[in-house]
Length: 191
Image 1 (cartoon, rainbow, N blue to C red):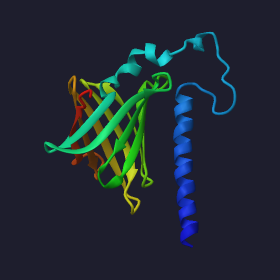
Image 2 (cartoon, one colour):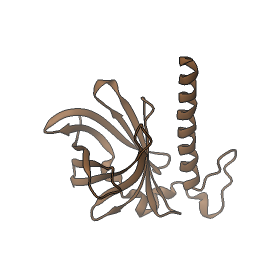
Image 3 (cartoon, rainbow, N blue to C red):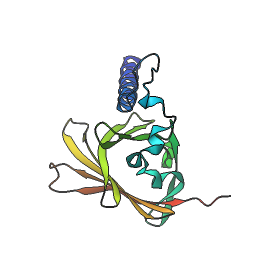
């Protein structure tokens, strides 16, 4: 029975990740399967590198130590991949937990998207924009009992080598907010 439940959980995780990857492909106008026919307009080698909106989250790219309350908590490696179309986060947390987020600008929707997946089966999806000097995401998730919660995730570029991340959650549709995480990323010095 336990192995059957694990199998269902694994299939659900694969389906969620597969759906996220299909969404990612669709947002770039790529076919979900097979060949990559290119139109004359789509023959540019790096279209995302040339799109100013797709560069709005580049301030987060780099190697980081994460501080919470002036104490080093975790590490984070954030890179540009897929022709600079995706900002990929590789997060290594306390207690051996690891996660990745795929961040990309969907030109058709004129929105940024973040899909977070961790090694414990967690999946979070956000949409947002760069506004008022910060990258601002919002999304809905469910508690284990099925009730909905609203979440917002904000990245503030503080200075060249510091970024603040604020993650908040509301259980009453956004009337009140509780802080889930508030930390600062400090860019690692080259060795």
